[in-house]
Length: 272
Ligand code: PAF
Image (cartoon, rainbow, N blue to C red; front, side, top):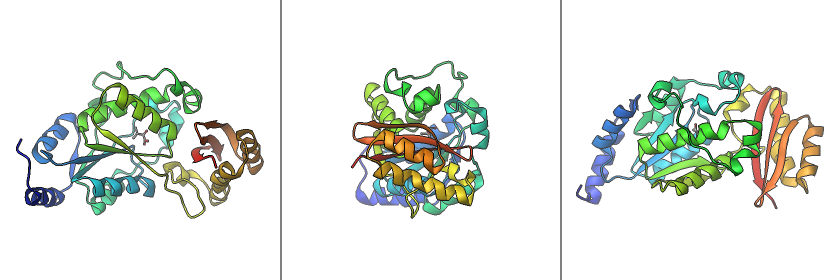
């Protein structure tokens, strides 16, 4: 296809912005892409829905850096090791669509399980080293589900750039590794964790905490930042009322997963 002039790009961009398309199948997405993308840059934000400010920050960054932005909303059950956890995941598709329309994204890719897994998950992608520890150790099969769905999504969307939050640090490293290992052409853009005024990392799961729970949860980030060792952080977190799954220092970062009021929270900070 011929390269567009700046004016063409502007007009195509403005026209595309007039409507938000909701695409339910890989074929529908392909047709939308063929009609709208051409030589424009395409930003992609993968989500499981239950959108909060953390997701919206990724979307804003994509809108700034690309001509067009697509967001996927797909609650990927293959990455949940616990049915109760999947069941409790907050989902309000209409609310998500309203938030994305307000920001001005061009398309939402919202397939169902059969559309994403015509093979019923008989084929999967795995990583055999770092995915076995930390999150991988505590959530068996989690990263197989994440990497498989991210590979499928990147192949379908064929984005210029895809945006991932640093809150899921281990996920981010594994996605970057997979993109490199399989020569995928999408650039992975890492975005800083969005936190509330007291430092609590925004997460869909925070909605399940009581007001008292939120107060305690805010200590997670503080303790990770101030403790002088992972062991010390673990002790302080237990004293604060968390059930600690792990605290570990890896390559200059301190990563942790804890449970509070039955809600699993993760966070990570740069070690000072
Ligand atoms: O980080 C998430 O929300 C999910 O793991 C992702 C990347 C959308 C894959 O389902």
